[in-house]
Image (cartoon, rainbow, N blue to C red):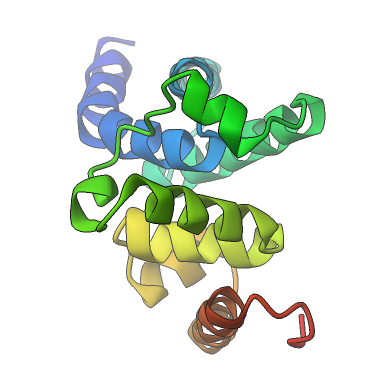
Length: 167
């Protein structure tokens, strides 16, 4: 069990920040992101403590986190961007510093929220988490070509705001 604990702590050190940033970006709520990140690592620990082998901890954590985020979306009340702004919304990701204005930042978030989940997910993994197409394909269990096409379509849909692109 001692070796298991050491491996788990190594995974925590290696992946906790990227999982937290992923959750913050997807949930737009730092507290919920902390809860989801913590729950993901608890589930990973339980899985390992039961004697199960983890071949790819990063992929497993993404899977757990994405399932927990889906659960959060299901129970999440719809909150307007104005209300989020009044409450001091801060996603904790430094993309704001790269944008010209706070309004543009909120505009981007609003457009991201309108994208179908399958497009939003690959865009976040590619452009927020910095994963390669190959890594995303492996994590999602799909071909690199399918992921490349989805990223391209997601970017086009994001640029145009069109709902007519083929899903």
